[in-house]
Image 1 (tube, rainbow, N blue to C red):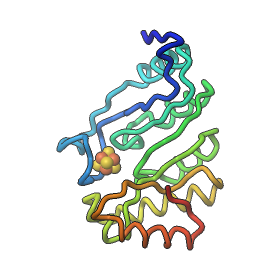
Image 2 (tube, rainbow, N blue to C red; image 1 turned 135 degrees about the vertical axis):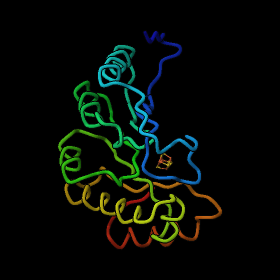
Image 3 (cartoon, rainbow, N blue to C red; image 1 turned 90 degrees about the horizontal axis):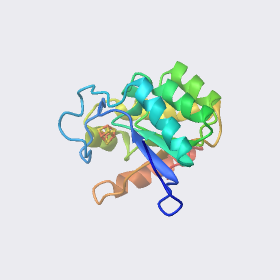
Length: 181
Ligand code: SF4
């Protein structure tokens, strides 16, 4: 049971739905077993946590992982949070967003989706440890933007290593009228 008072009220919660992820980013804090599909919450547990958060007055929920879309009930949980009228944001690497998932996401009242991108294709794939990851993330970013404007953008962490490559990425996305934060 989540008990909050006026003094310790929580506005925003991050829900890390799974440790599973299909990438192997250098900076990932989840450790070496990241590719094990290890689900943290059952669907029922995730829903009951959202019920408690709502009752406790939480306003915004950010879903992440691991990779949120490697969690088998991701869409159901996101939809449930939308039904409860949370401000919903999603952090994802974008590589597992299929046409069907993109359709569903654009139909839901989601505030924001951020897709992690770290630089040019060569840099990005090296940085996340998987060849072809850049193309999949970019494809998801484009697809979501085609279906719905102003709710999906690229986001990045800035390091000494990636700063030059990020500038190139920024220009490339700008040319395609895509946003990065
Ligand atoms: S996409 Fe996120 S969860 Fe997956 S390896 Fe990279 S940082 Fe870790």
